[in-house]
Image 1 (cartoon, rainbow, N blue to C red):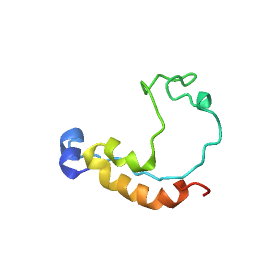
Image 2 (image 1 turned 180 degrees about the vertical axis):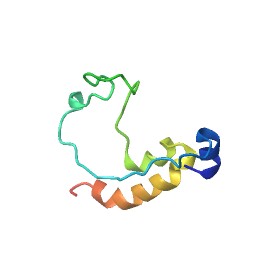
Image 3 (image 1 turned 45 degrees about the vertical axis):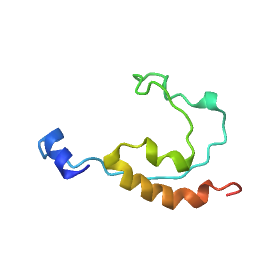
Image 4 (image 1 turned 120 degrees about the vertical axis):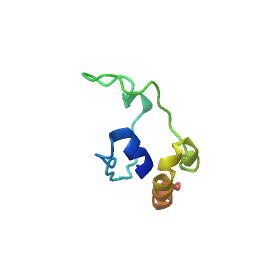
Length: 83
């Protein structure tokens, strides 16, 4: 999180989340994905959809784009057909 936002959001007590990224290939069907109706949990998402890697950056809030640009660069070879 950018320092100016962390100061406003949490009074400077926290710096945001540490993230680890993993690339996985989903081979199931869309009806197996339950982010809008997880059993035993409150609904966190209103909707979801698949997105192509090349459109991902445009979907991200501006202050997180740098991280996602790096993820896209790192994972792009894995997203190619036949990978």
